[in-house]
Length: 220
Image (tube, rainbow, N blue to C red; front, side):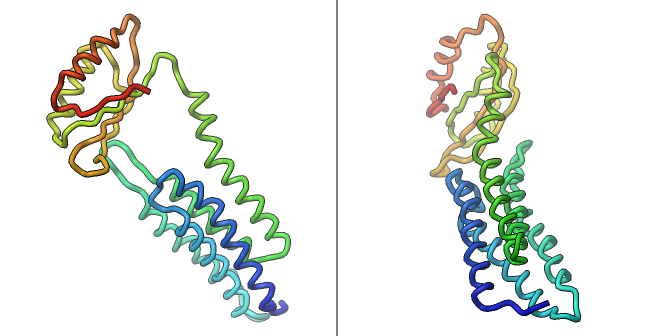
């Protein structure tokens, strides 16, 4: 086990920054809690740990002992990006991307052919994060389902009233998500609705528009 040159170590660290940035940039553009800087640091740190364990181990010890702890440590970090809001869980994909970025950083730290593997893995992860959601949406979209986004004042009874109106038009709620709007004074309610035959959209729009507690609404 030959010691690494400072040039080899520098190349691996620089590559880990670039690979982490590729995946982090995709997360950043979608406004995820762990974005560009987080993914760069996770990938960089994993590479640095891998190089350090390799240098510490020398010819007598197992270099994988330090590297193996990266999986556990990154697991705790990923758990911090998961948010539970009512029946909706957010951040699972970001947590998985952080976990994968750590593996890419380890591969970059090992060097050799693993550098190429790290580059290919980063490209594949970027494809999964950026293109698969579009394909998934295309394959799972239904003509009888639509999304309704409503901004209302921040009160629980407002949500109940809105749901009552929705149900009165024989619409079936397939998914409901609520979160505070940007200024924190209201709620943004996202509804995925099953649309029955003969649905009168104009009648529902009239009821929504006449409700003073509803600030805006939008069909997608």
